Image (cartoon, rainbow, N blue to C red; front, top):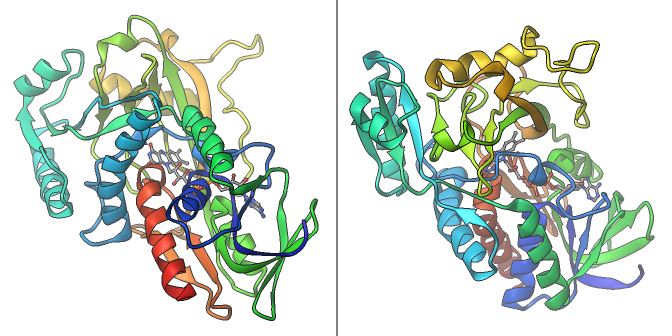
Length: 380
Ligand SMILES: Cc1cc2nc3c(=O)[nH]c(=O)nc-3n(C[C@H](O)[C@H](O)[C@H](O)COP(=O)(O)OP(=O)(O)OC[C@H]3O[C@@H](n4cnc5c(N)ncnc54)[C@H](O)[C@@H]3O)c2cc1C
C-alpha cells in the first residue's frame, strides 16, 4: 500500500463501513480506503450486541444520540428493506412494576416525544397483558418503532456495496502509527506499509482512544461488558416483541429481545471490565460442564427476568454471546455521555469518533451523513 488517497477510515465496524459507503455514494472523494485490524468487517462491538433498532427515547433532546438515533431508525429500516436484510419491527414495551414507577414511564414518554419519537403510549396492567400475555407488570410504555435487524447480513451487504462502489477494503490491517506529513497524514499499518491520506476518520470503536492517542491525544475509553443468555423454542414464542424493565445506571436493565428468527435474547447486563478483549465465557458451568443455576452470574440474569416473565424456567436459558461497550463514563461516575465526533486538536485533517456505544448501530446511517458533511465542508 503506497501513494496518496483522499480518505482513510480506520475501523471496519458499522460506523466505519457506513462512513465509507456514504463517502463513495455521494462522490467528491475518489479514493477511500477502509482499514480493519481484524480478519473480517464487524469484528468488534458491531457484531456483539442486541441487534436492536432503537427508537431514541432515552437521550437528552438535541444530543447527538437523540438526533442520530431517531433519524437512523428510519434509515436503517429503509436500508434493510432495500437490500433484503432480515429485520423485524417488533415494537417494545418498557415496564413499570408498581404504580410508583409509572412516573418513570411518563418521563421517558416526554423525553421521547421531545426527541421526535412517534406513537408512544402508556398502558395499564390490562393493556400490557393484551400486548404481551406472558409478561407481568403494573403498566408499560409502548414504543412502536423499535425493532431488530440481522447485523451479520448487514455486513455481507455492506462489504459487497463497498467493493461495487470502488472503496478499497483491507482486513488484517491494524493502524499502528499516524503523523502529519505535508498536505496530509501518514498512516502506518502493521501489515501493509504506509499510506498518505488527505483526511483520516478514526472509527476504531473500543480502540478509538488508542488510535487517537497516536497523535498525542489523551483520550480514554472505559470498557463496559454486557453478557447474554438465549431462549429458543416454544417458551421464546410467548414473547412478541422487546420487553425492557425501567433503565438502570449503566445500561437499560436485563431485557428480552425477540430476534427475526424467533430466538429470544436475555440481557445484556452492564459490568465494568479491565480489558477491552475480555470476551471469555461467564463462569456459569459446573464441573460436568452443565449450566449451574446456583451460580451468581446465572442468577444475575435469571432473577430479574423471572420477576416479569414468570413462566421462564432455569433450564430454558442457554449462555449466548457478550459484547463490550466503548464508554466515556469513568468508573464511579453516573449519567449521560454523548457520542463525540470531533476534529483532532492538533491536526485539522483527522476526525475522531469516540464513545460510540448504544445506540451506535441504529445511529450509524445518520452518523455517516454527519461525518461526510464535515469532510465535504473541510475539503471546501
Ligand atoms: C452489549 C451491547 C449491546 C448493544 N446493543 C445495541 C443495540 O441493540 N442497538 C444499537 O443501536 N446499539 C447497540 N450497541 C452499541 C453498538 O453495538 C455500537 O455503538 C456499534 O457497534 C459501534 O460501532 P463501531 O463501528 O464504532 O465499533 P466496532 O464495531 O467496535 O468497530 C470498530 C472496528 O475498529 C477496528 N479497529 C480497532 N483498532 C484498530 C486499528 N488500530 N486499526 C484498524 N482497525 C481497528 C476493530 O477491529 C473494529 O472492527 C450495543 C453495544 C453493546 C456492547
